[in-house]
Length: 415
Ligand SMILES: Cc1cc2nc3c(=O)[nH]c(=O)nc-3n(C[C@H](O)[C@H](O)[C@H](O)COP(=O)(O)OP(=O)(O)OC[C@H]3O[C@@H](n4cnc5c(N)ncnc54)[C@H](O)[C@@H]3O)c2cc1C
Image 1 (cartoon, rainbow, N blue to C red):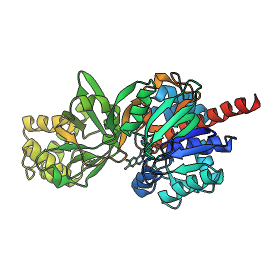
Image 2 (cartoon, rainbow, N blue to C red):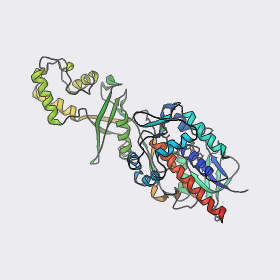
Image 3 (spheres, rainbow, N blue to C red):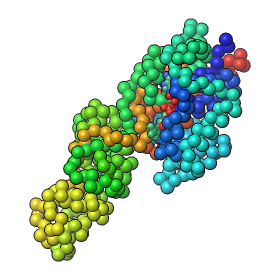
Image 4 (cartoon, protein in one colour):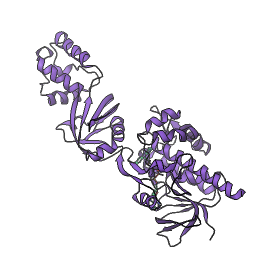
């Protein structure tokens, strides 16, 4: 049997991008092997069913800042194929995209099915073969540099080049290891924080803009500023998701038990003290509950904080004792919550860890250990924060791998 030019293991975003790019650049015999019965399932469920395709951060040096792991290596990749290129790539294929206020990019239709249809049609129009329910369990490389792929389907697939685009699935790491690669232990990233803090659930649904949050672990400080959302189980929102990503490995090793520090006020310690003294002197007849020293705080949150500090909310500002004022300032500047675990939902569950990136040539996405083997997407030890950056990495790495396979193919056919 004639070997395939390229076999793609994993029919997700990265796998489809690789197959389409290779096919559109002259590679003839391509097959996608997908283990489940569904193609691109993560695209379907992503972005709440809308699929946050990428982020309108066009400049590669700014784009890389959104990857806690892999950013340095990605700069060169983004200089070749960044978010603007992805935008054009999809639009040229007839998928209309829109940029939302926070720079996230979605299909105009708000439907992830349209992204899937676009990719599926593009692959089929170039005669890419697609096999579903084809779970790959073993890959062997023969002495004449051909790969033999054994799956749960009876037939063995043979191919000159192979790409592992298996996402965060453990079988992909196993396949890579068997071909000589090392794996950085996979741990979750992009999750919310749970706390058993009494009465916090009374503030469920409260959202505050531009809050500084901090975690200190093993003398390392992780900080982030962003929007915070209080939920039934604890804390969520972009500030928390990003912090979970920055500190993903350390939080895993602490079994997700740590103190979260929240700075509720944008003022400095001295400025806040002055503001509170002003209230004591000038609004002395008003109740604490009716006059918040920090305008960002909602009334519900202010009442919760006063209860937490142990100050009567009906107290008049003039009656606030100096020690109570100090407690109030300390809480507003560095409010501490014991986090007891990850929350039940992440916005974009993603795996931090995977195939070691110094074992991969980022100019081609080819293995430095096993020629003919390529990688793209989440299977690599690269992960981004929430906002479309994880798909962006899939498109970029898939595109580079597809281009590299097509170059190899040209060389062979021209020989
Ligand atoms: C709920 C949710 C929402 C998300 N929302 C967003 C978002 O809006 N924007 C964003 O940028 N990112 C988002 N992400 C992250 C994004 O989905 C992933 O980064 C991306 O899907 C990774 O693509 P991939 O192609 O590398 O892997 P995957 O999409 O995981 O695809 C891998 C494929 O390989 C198959 N496979 C695995 N092992 C084998 C095997 N041995 N044999 C054959 N097939 C195999 C799997 O079945 C799967 O179909 C979200 C993730 C989740 C879970």
